[in-house]
Image 1 (tube, rainbow, N blue to C red):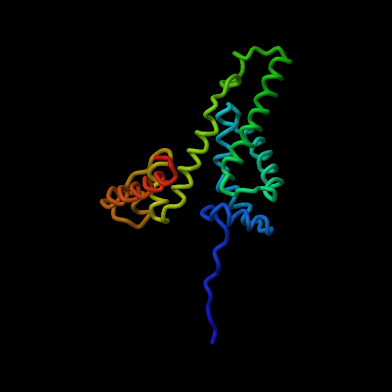
Image 2 (cartoon, rainbow, N blue to C red):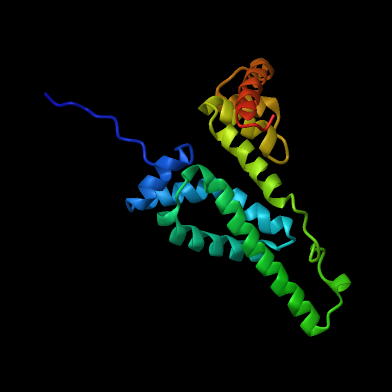
Length: 198
């Protein structure tokens, strides 16, 4: 008799940090990709808050990924991973900003002539805000598939999509979107409360 087995699902961003880190340390490249997918928005958001362009934010992202890769084996508390990533991203962003300021001074360029970047003064709240945003992304990712997709379609897509289009994509009646949205938002609010974000 042949027994059919369901293929085991590979790592994805819904895995716990502990599970992803353990798989990364075991050499699972899919787990590394999933870990980066989980925290890419957190990493990118910090240099952007420092006024970096998309290209400069990408450079900071690469530097943070290298530091994360090299530092993962010595990570003592996996629970502190998001904070550690945010701190590394802040340090890298600060160094980017400092080098940029030095270049402006060296070249004698007036900072007022610089692109609309915040080259001087960044709030101390950058990491806290970035971590809150990551907490919201994590809470949305932890919703069941239908709620997660509905929240993404309703609140993260620009321009907003019409209910009829969303209903068709999710296989729902247009009139049920509002009711289901309410239930999904209650679940999201409960998860945000547990994470200390609501």
